[in-house]
Image 1: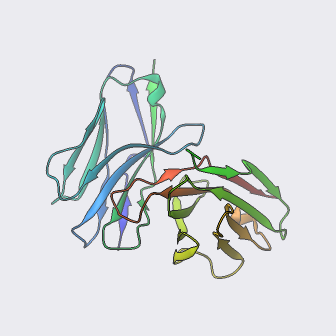
Image 2: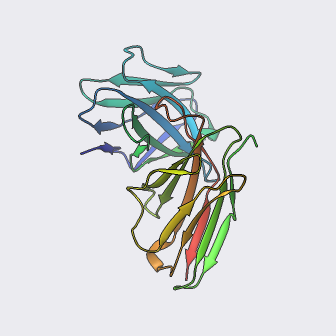
Length: 115
Length: 115
């Protein structure tokens, strides 16, 4: 079965601190891409970061970085120096290379930033 | 255009009525995806198109739901004889190609409320 599990329905962090959102997934395929999307209250879906499964190096985008553990099928998102604008729902998803290109989604983690 | 444009932003229908949602993908993007986000934030894949051809419709309910992407027209998702359970936010996304590393760019969604 193709599934994505985000075990933290809600997380809170103090402004300027670091927070890590967890994500595990299950697939029998070896070639895929992983994504983190952010959905603020405005409902817009914003791509935060993506990771190629064949790359061992963890992706980084400014304050956002991932810890990708392929053997463990884990893909956590670390947000450094949290800002009020980071408050949103965060969705983890993956997409198989040799398949129908749809995104397989987790249920999301609500991130609250405390000022 | 530079963004995925979804209309209307909010659609209210009485149970049993028809609902039609529209999506204009980013110019030059050949793949279009429809997702349904229900109240618990879960994303469900519905259907994808490669240009005007259905690419994958494994997520589409067999009854009542239909979708089209015609040349020179916005894509559309139509629900006949709506039910209360159809209440959700419907997102359209487009990507430049079908390659798995291509991010899907999302519209702002259409909130469908069935009364």
